[in-house]
Length: 201
Image (tube, one colour):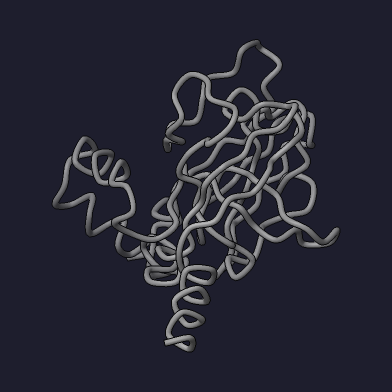
């Protein structure tokens, strides 16, 4: 019986739900600068990986197939499905930091093969997200250290997808895929074109 309890605890820890404390200005207004406790789940990435696959070629091919059979409205509705697929554009994730240790909490803005054009303050550079990587940015684009500084992040560093803001209790607790509109005209967020724009047939 004791071994069963240990196994259950291990499975919950590795594949279930967990909480963490996020501080800093990078995810304003979604998360509070003074710190929010968030709840995230680890299972969907383990089961489904990246939505559409981690290959730029496959995602571009599937994009063209979907465009031939589905309306944009239907594709947008699919993106709103919660916990029914892999890590997708719009998800807020907890990921291991590439260099500094610890974790970061950012929003996924691009997937493998997607074309990211940086804002002018970053030199208008253009990046194609490599296979098996994601592009992460903070919702507060004018004050966030993210993929615009250190590049695409290996998807293997993703710890889980954020579901709820647990504490403090305020406003709408569910973390949605919808990136909030900038509060002012100082937004420096990137412009993203889907992998299908590579015109791979």
